[in-house]
Image 1 (cartoon, rainbow, N blue to C red):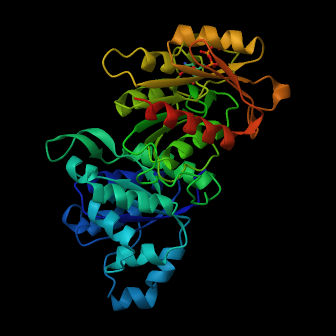
Image 2: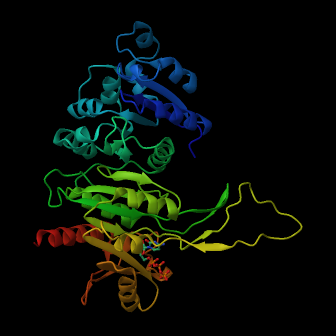
Image 3: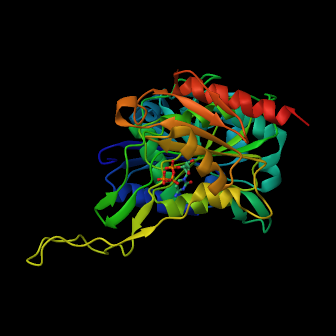
Length: 414
Ligand code: CTP
């Protein structure tokens, strides 16, 4: 789906710039035209020559280059792309973007751009946690800038924590998701990452969308989940100020601004991404995880032959909700699951809550006549300990807002 698309890649200064070379290679392999702009700092980490060779295009570094301005001009540079990707996005560049500065070619292009912007931040963990950086990220989110990563792990500075740039494969998937989706209108309701909101200082993990379980390199097993409910919940939690990680399978939904998107495909990848996001205060598992995967995925495309159709042997996927709800040392304080049912909705949901050991379960009717799967509306029965609340039919956004409200009330209690 990326073939023929145009990406303007802005590299700022960070050791992770070397990963951007791999990112360019992967984008080029998928038929994407990549034009690169490098900040002065970026040129200390990778050479413009290497970037140009991989892009098979000229690299732009200087706002004051007479030749570049007469041939291309920074306005054209910013407009002749489907998407602007900033990778690596350093703390400094994020701050300059948030302030609306235009003091070099990268920031001028960003300020003059009318295209969607995806950033892949990278920095030291203390710089990442600094209130200035977090406020800058919230500002960018409120303007609709989408973020992928950073991940946690060992950083180039030797410390361990958040700040590692997302891997090139994750950035490519995020690019696909952003380009697939219609532009998101930035607003508080759609996840402005409100600083000082009722969930400020809380961290939330949300899963969304379907998973895809490969059969061979070109085929997979999946389901009709649209990701609408999970994405709306991530947006609503971020809207109340929660630091929100959204682990999502492939969907047509725009990644909500202000959330950290971790794109995945399989259930196993979803579990790894969820465990990497811990510790969190709140976990809401809204994904329609495929219950089974193909036990041995073929390394080549399966061909028709005289022996007839292949037999696919399935293996059970990990239960992500149950795994997170039963973590020994870092179980989130509030773990919420969904129960997709077609009959005996509340009874089945009660049993599911007990079996998976989550705190709340949102039971919904997903029989085809309900229109829940893929539709915009949902009818929820909230099952807590002994009580059940029957919510009226609502849009998925209203369900998300009500749930976020209930969650914030839960955390208001001592
Ligand atoms: N879930 C999960 N991992 C799985 C399967 C489900 O995290 N491998 C989560 C879903 O995100 C949802 C909840 O578990 O929050 C219930 O999902 P549902 O599909 O209703 O239940 P299943 O466990 O698949 O049970 P069944 O198919 O028997 O109804």
